[in-house]
Length: 211
Length: 211
DNA sequence: GTCTATAAGGGGATAGAC
DNA sequence: GTCTATCCCCTTATAGAC
Image (cartoon, rainbow over all chains, first blue to last red; front, side, top):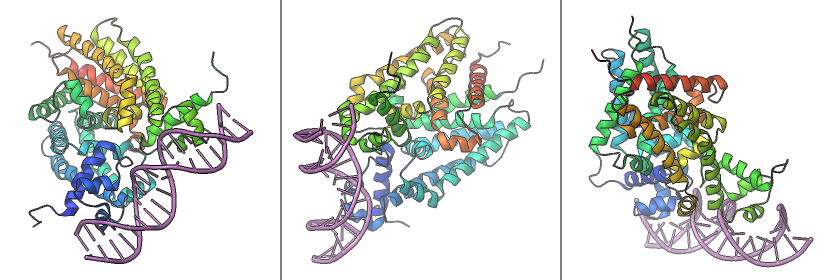
């Protein structure tokens, strides 16, 4: 079992995740991370060989959290409509549980990073792991269309919509809260987000009624 | 009429938009921008008083493009369902027309920037102008619910979904293209995105049929 | 395992020649 | 309007004391 008081390494990962999520890789210096963890800059390099490696480690932790919650929901039990409901709920739950996750994911998806970061991320295989999750979600939608539970759709487009509606939402921060004039990570807000998206998808994907 | 050959200022704005969109404010140095425009670093400071001011100017140009295309679509002609269709099409068109727009918007929304950038952006009023557009979209949805054209929904949630489904999509870059295994900015891809989103929204927002 | 000190480089910004 | 040269600060990373 781990230490009762978090190790310096774990503390560094926590503050690095927080800082990288809010301002991005290039904007955060290692001294800022170390300082926020209550350490000197050089001590950080004792735990991580480079800044890029620290960032990649943070990313891996985020992806592991996502896998832990979303993969179980993808085990095909019941019809595809129910599975999609479970998956949407799982994605929203895991993004809401750690408010930094959505922003880090968003950055890793659309940011053309530093060469060092690209190399370190590639070595950690996070992109493949994210792609593997999305492939399974695609399969659920395809099964639903094949079974006639969903109307025919462009699966990649629907996937982009689901990702955008979940990841973007929980990454939107102050912008989103200004839009709602209310917190985004409150229990009610999370439950409402889940409900609204599930209804929109179920009704929007329902097949045409035969005359 | 403007110069036939673009002025240095316009050229700087173009390359800065490109670079800031792909890697973010902190990751791009003024020398990189100036170099890409074929100028020395110091020449840039002749056209813009500071890096933050350059970034803010880029943002204003993007917001003006959005306004130019989306505001006309918001003029309420026809019922709210048709207006929403027009608005979705206009957002997609303007984001597709300039591939940098979506990423810059996304960054300005969810990035906790440098203090200088926050100050410069606030001075330029871009946030208020984006908020003004979204307020008008909200009004369309509210009108639709009030008129019974749409089922009752959480308007902020639907707005987040629409923004996520459009801005995120066109900001997703290589990630999105890997998902589609095809270009995102091709004419067919743009038309399909429009169609898929409009159908999902129209069907997903349709009021319940009375028995 | 954390520190101070230092190296080597790049950042934004300014001054002044042309 | 663009250039070279320079300023000072902050960056990542390393070396070695404790």
